[in-house]
Image 1 (cartoon, rainbow, N blue to C red):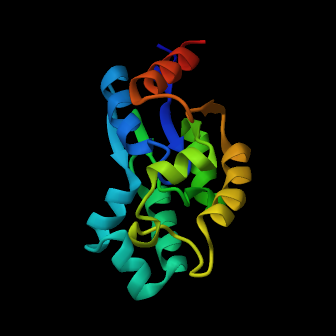
Image 2 (cartoon, rainbow, N blue to C red):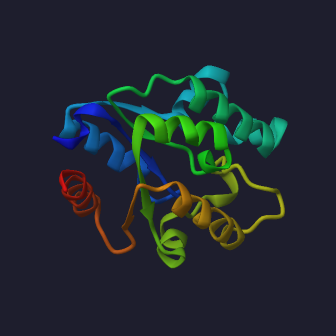
Length: 169
């Protein structure tokens, strides 16, 4: 398959399905799986929300960049945190080693999926609404994506199949 030489990185908003689809994609492609949010939590011994509550969103973004720059991503499917795209250095490393897939989900669909925005550990300014965050990040996701996939109306299995189809082209 086309992925034999490269890893796959999933980017997108919280609620886009990066972790769920990532695990299934790794299984489908016979690759290992990394979730950078989990890597952050394990490395610093705190939940993402605890990090933002105690140290602020910029510290969470710094931790995320450290993980993006150090995590072994060879021959892996990587589900990134939604704010990975704020790290130019981290994204440059990911793009050099992997195909980056943007799981694009519309704002209305995300709002239905994400009911815990205030407590989810999202790296955002304290005054930033979900709508503002979506508008700010979407351009960054589009900038870094090698493949963009509209997942707004796709179930998990449909999104998985669409990704596999796109990778085989």
